[in-house]
Amino acid sequence: MRTEISLLQHRLARRFLLPRPRTLVTCGCAEYNGAAQTLPLLGGVKTVACPFFMPLQRMDGSWPHPPRLPLGAGWQGHCTAPGHEGVVPSATQLQAGCNLGYASDCSWLPAERVWDAVRFSVIRDCGHRVVLCYVCEIGHRPGEHGQLEYNVLDDHWLRVHPDSRIQTMAECVVQTHLQKKSRSTPAHAADLAHG
Image 1: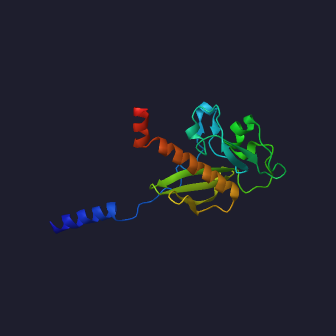
Image 2: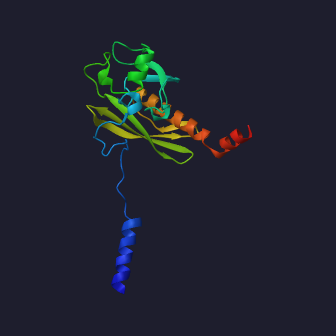
């Protein structure tokens, strides 16, 4: 009898008390270094943002599924690649390159660069704080990763990225996330039912 209790205590401890392995990034594929997630309706375009893109304003586009875009929506902005700083890309470039896909396909891309693409994921939202995971990729592999944290109540970033482009993209992701969240709250649903 004592052996059975010890075995049960051991199983419970393993299940509830010991730390569980945590996944750094979920990207819609079996393993992180697998092929980048693609959207068939977007012609197989990889869903990552260009690291040289500086998003400034949400853009209504003809994307079939805007919530699946790397920054949560389409964005207008300008290029920060050397020699093209401040240049506003065409609508085609914004839809096919800046908002989607690896920067390696862009003719404005500098030969020497730290990253080819950036991924973001909201990993925690506890109401008053939103935590993002970011991964900057080079050659389809993680080059840099970390977490950024936003305090919703104080409208203040607690952990920021030192590169203003990555930080601005993170702000776009959080803005889009919070807008989607506010549209899905029960109060909003009640307003729609009575409106």
